Image 1 (cartoon, protein in one colour):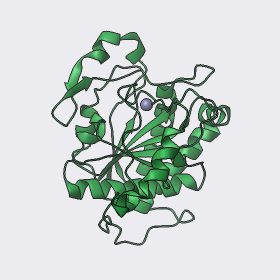
Image 2 (cartoon, helix red, strand yellow):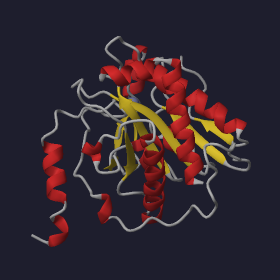
Image 3 (cartoon, rainbow, N blue to C red):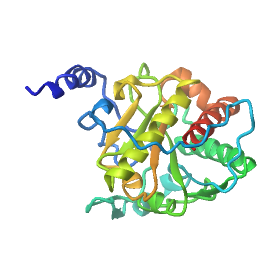
Image 4 (cartoon, rainbow, N blue to C red):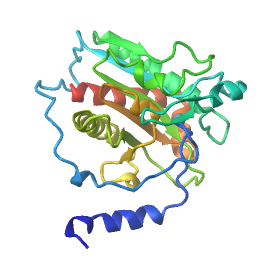
Length: 273
Ligand SMILES: [Zn+2]
């Protein structure tokens, strides 16, 4: 066996030993973990952080920056099954369903309510710091937009952050993970997205548990997510935690928890700049 493959074996074994890792229904519920790719195997991402990142203690200045925020799913999706089932471009030559309903906590608090609450809070903080914010949706009562538009809406932004929460069936599965498109549309864009994922993961890890089943940085590399595939700017999906885990569900359902998630995502964005 080539020696470069050896470090992957323990990682692969760890992933195979996990209880079923079900998605949040980000897109297709059947799509879960793909072949793990060790982040060590990736070339060093380009250094995009040429400016000193403001600390959490000083107010960040994001004037002149444009940030795209995608709160996953939508409140009207569940009542429009045929509308969200229609096929749209997956960004890699195929198609997939327009959208999904997402997951929920044991007490039926829906993922779309969580992503909307965090997305709104994050957008307000970004605007307060002087940034222009583009949202993939304007409310939590509509249907869609479809996953292809959840990439292309960010075309004029510097970066795109898609907010989700995961729905592993096992209540013992815990922690956040960050997803990047792999392969990316171009190698440069893939590297920039990995760079963004590393900053988001590090900022999230200051307050939340990383799910290292996805790798040491809790970063998952997937070829099948249309939102990421259709993005022309550095883009990540942050699966903020596991909605079936009682501790994380409690945080996701509470205003204070939602605020904490938004603050962590804000810090990741500030660090990336
Ligand atoms: Zn989701």
